[in-house]
Image 1 (cartoon, rainbow, N blue to C red):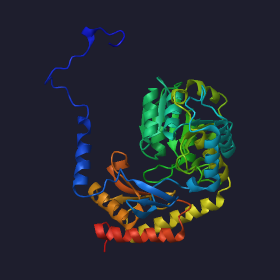
Image 2: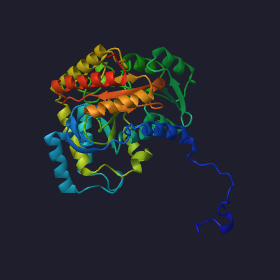
Image 3: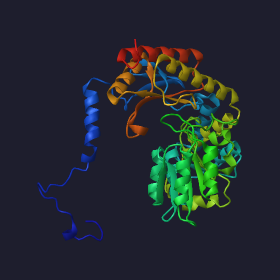
Length: 419
């Protein structure tokens, strides 16, 4: 018997009492999935990679497949120095820490990766989380609580929305990338209230870039702190790869920059960097940091080496931009509808007419030997279904041309573009 609960207090289940199935809220999604699979389409959300050959290729369903949906923007997953660092840390420190950072979970490698982040961003403080999701969840929920206001783009990532909910702040969304709408929201917030503006450098669904220069200026005009999630731009955009904040000249005006290791860095984990003089107290008050086991030593070792190599990644950044421009331009010339008029990042979104034809196009590409992401509502803006292509600096010129040929054949077969 549970402590403090008498037998008479135990819930009684009666046959046929009409209790609602807690899964019933998902019935529409279950039906959509079953309809897709009944039509013979492979499950686009359960692809298995039997073997990964390189940053750009894997064996999927027994077929050599070009990877165009992995977020491995800078191709660091197979970098020899990165892999060797992970192997050495695994041998020296074991498989895991079995503890939180505030207890036994801080190893030398955790301090080294935070030092690498401070050097990469030229900032005073860096705090590493076990995932990028937790970085947003922890930082946002801790600095903005009940009575404070969070003003955020309506297309913000799920981890940002969840951070807002966890902190119980007043949430004020504004129209995507609309500077005037942002200012209107800030103007209505009571004077003296705590205000946090949350933005993203690159939005992950369409690959479009935020007008951070103007938005940060508006935020500061109304006395708000600014947090920018640079998950999809870190390592690639900006002279030193510091993201859209650097590219648009506002990095010193941002109070917090959130990022992840699972994209350009090529491993897993999340972080926040800041110049705020009181930032270190976050290590004691941020619950998702305090109550989560720290990253394994092998992971932080790979991340530290990768970050330091990205500081000298100008050639890789240039080639990735070349790949993005070629793929975007080629798909546009073929007649596909894209998420942005011009290439803005390493993400190229190809908009589909509907979910059924989007799934069919995804499968046709997979049979061609190409893996992309199928994205659907409600994760996508404006109820769009799209195929999201994530380019890598390691994609060769020949691979990009091969990808365009695959899109052309699959698009004509499914009827997305004209034969």
